Image (cartoon, rainbow, N blue to C red; front, side):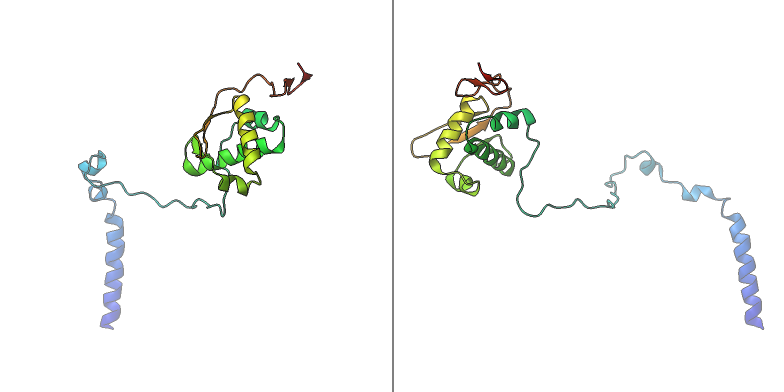
Length: 164
């Protein structure tokens, strides 16, 4: 019976302790150095509830300006669009607006060497890119973000309204 009496006393002590918990609120306060945010310790970060989803495989990194892409679509031949997509693909990989355009990259987009030359000339004439060429070297292409020429294709036709 002695054990039962001790349990009753502990429960009674807990109820008395429960009533006194709010009397000493100063023990719950932050030290002044931590309260000012000037403590030497680095702040702890909370774990984010959702982790960013990683994309499997390769992709075009944007943003790609729609005006730029529309101007490339309006050029003659399918190679101009394929080359422009290859340029943006490599630009995203290299994180630079200036890229070396290799034949290996263009093979992945189904563009042969001669079509590459024609497409680069077309894109350059449209004011979408600047090309630096050296003999026996791959061309270095710089993407121009300025507005392309006012809708004029290399064949002298207006892209939007037919002949000029």
